Length: 443
Image (cartoon, rainbow, N blue to C red):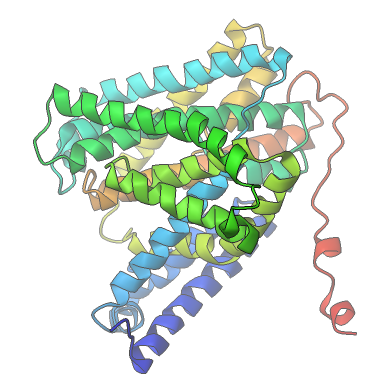
């Protein structure tokens, strides 16, 4: 009971070592080449997966990742844990306070970049046959919701990492974009949770099922954003709270897994619960304790769980057999044009200058982690098939690369990102200070 044979454990750990090494090495090399790290981490999975190793050396691929019956299940567990940690860390980056002068920009872009792209994505399904992307759940409503979300979604983790790497996280531009992305993605995750609820229902799709799913999702959102933080502020530091006294980090991990579990039981979606747990933690704690939680969680998550998750995403992709370059290019062009045009003209409507509007449009196009999460959740629920899964993952990667490249170009050309950042001082992470040389470390 609860046992894994020595040979099976050895084989599984070898697979983890290979995936983790490939993800971290290629992620590091990607950053050296000024490419978002997530692209390198997914590339690690592509290298070891059916796209490359599985195509040229199928026996070696099978031996490494399908060597015993439960190995795929164990890799699936690591994949899900990595996804849960990614959603939690995304929630911890949530910005719920805007400067008063920035509120107008935030509200306008949140409304514009959410509603119009979502509607454009939904309406686009009437111009082509979405059945070509249909998954095993065979649910057209859920598929249309996923397509609509994929056009509108923006990445909090990737755009934050781009700003940190460029040394501009303290800029007015970065604070506005991260704040917008947080609220923007909550709205879109409500839509994904509704799609999940529709698929999970065994009574068929009708207006009652849709309204019930929407009601449960919004109810869960209200509890997570308002009631749970109110409770946590009153019980967390109480002397009788033995769990908090026993383990500071363990207390919030219990909150993470517990809220994710409740979301799963409500058919809201486990990953939505993980996101809400991160946001509830962020809202509850003062800034110094939030940084303590984030530091503790981020170190293990971004060195182990999250790179492993993105590597397994690459492992699940089979670009050699299940990827249409033509469909991808059309979808990339459509998604990029829609989000760029909408954000640009929304910004112009509220009197922002042309360069600021273009910079905001570029940043909001980075689909990154949430784009990949959208594709993996939709694929696991059977909403989309493997071909569309590959298209959505590649869309998330390429748009993140494009956004980072544009912002880097603007900074290198000496132009400002937006008014208020004219005298911006670049504060790049001091890696040498954080990671001393081997010679120094072992003196």
